[in-house]
Length: 323
Ligand SMILES: C[S@@+](CC[C@H](N)C(=O)[O-])C[C@H]1O[C@@H](n2cnc3c(N)ncnc32)[C@H](O)[C@@H]1O
Image (cartoon, rainbow, N blue to C red; front, side, top):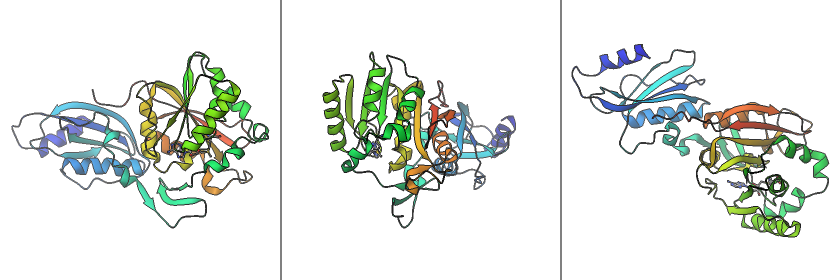
């Protein structure tokens, strides 16, 4: 860092006033190269987007006063392999979380759609089609418990009685209604973008006499849950369908309390015996890449289920934001 500041000082003019700047240390596994010298602030933010799109991560942020002469961005190698340090002038209204500066539109590509895909690419993966509400009966099939050991998944979640659980992409509420009795002093929230699914969930809750349940009509890029209010986000066979995964992850991260968990359940792509359409599967490596780049910390992966990975991520207690 000291070397970086020295380089910076040599680039700016002799006697200048200090400006608030963000010094952002990034893991840069894609080895994205800085265009060189001093750039404008927007260029710094675009560079950040490229590093994240290539699987990079924010490692630390510090907001400090530096003599930048005029506003701009710089970069220098970090202390460790595949690390890069970015620095840019902060405007008054700039977010203190660099990941809020990402332009999501620049993270997505396109291709001719596969039979079960939508032709939109995110971090090397084609996003799958959404399962329509007419498939609700398949989600509720009685043999599902045995096929997927859904009972074991409920145990693996290890919730506390007063937890607030958000089941995102809840569909008919198969898991929302199995989790609700486990949080008698808390509640289970089902979030789906299909109002028909939410209606099915509420009808199933009524039939089963479960009261600590509510539904939210989400948007494709927003879970519509207030910040810092959820203990556990559950995603079962849903994340691969999200048409705007970056925005959804950022929205889920904000909805979680610090230290709150994501339980991500996806069919194992690594296992050719799992008979699910290709874009409805995901490898552990891909899932970690996607969640870690969006600010989540990986805790562990359970592989006890017959067909699915269960990845646990955490919202860090201290976000890598400038203070
Ligand atoms: C395959 S179903 C899984 C339902 C449920 N999790 C289960 O395992 O029984 C996926 C659900 O995700 C929902 N979905 C897709 N994109 C979504 C988004 N951006 N936000 C919320 N729900 C979404 C779909 O409408 C669908 O009901």
